[in-house]
Amino acid sequence: MKKYECDLCGYIYDPAEGDPDGGIPAGTAFEDIPDDWVCPLCGASKEDFSVLEE
Image 1 (tube, one colour):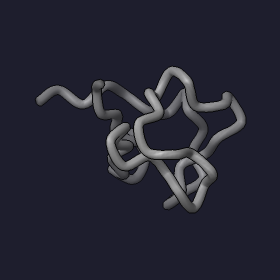
Image 2 (image 1 turned 90 degrees about the vertical axis):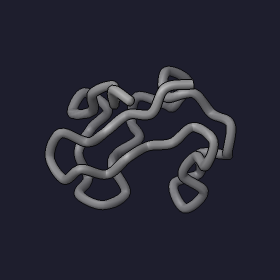
Image 3 (image 1 turned 90 degrees about the horizontal axis):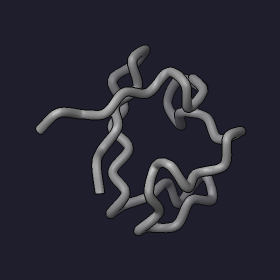
Image 4 (image 1 turned 180 degrees about the horizontal axis):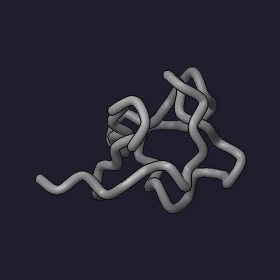
């Protein structure tokens, strides 16, 4: 699964880790996160994330 980076603050969403504090369990693909989820660091919406090229 691909990682995604917040364009505003640089937070990396890693599907292997999820966002436990945000209610997103480990193993959740970015596409499967609810649309109302926001970046845990800066509050940016999913639309402000880009695929992280590795």
